[in-house]
Figure 1 (cartoon, rainbow, N blue to C red):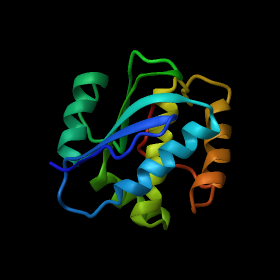
Figure 2 (figure 1 turned 120 degrees about the vertical axis):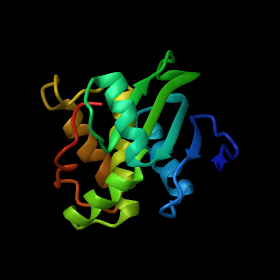
Figure 3 (figure 1 turned 30 degrees about the horizontal axis):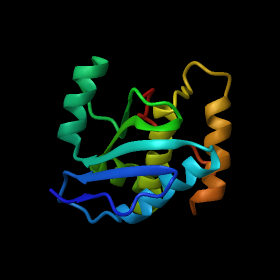
Figure 4 (figure 1 turned 90 degrees about the vertical axis):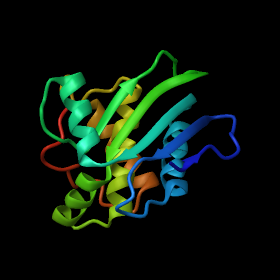
Length: 163
């Protein structure tokens, strides 16, 4: 199971684990997206990024959200705070579902994975598009314009609920 830790900058440390083998994933690119978002938000700490398949996401979704179906991204906030070196939490992405979303939305897989990593990161920080007044959506749109080569106005995709 490949992992990536690299040299840790003063901002966000990203520990990446690729638990799927079906598709090639540029972990360096996803790490850059997460660090870019952390820099833009003045966030410090550590986040784990796990890339998995639909089976793993379905199990996690059932166990932690009571939903017996797969999903694209799940976020698990940690004990850290946005301005410490503590663990901010974990982001788990289904590369299988990301590939299907990308095809349906006219994006590349790297673009969709970036969108999902960013979305999951905002949830780890405590943002919640299901309960706020649009704050998370506006912030995510702004960060997409800044960090991703994907239209900010496009929705993240159907089938994606609160993480």
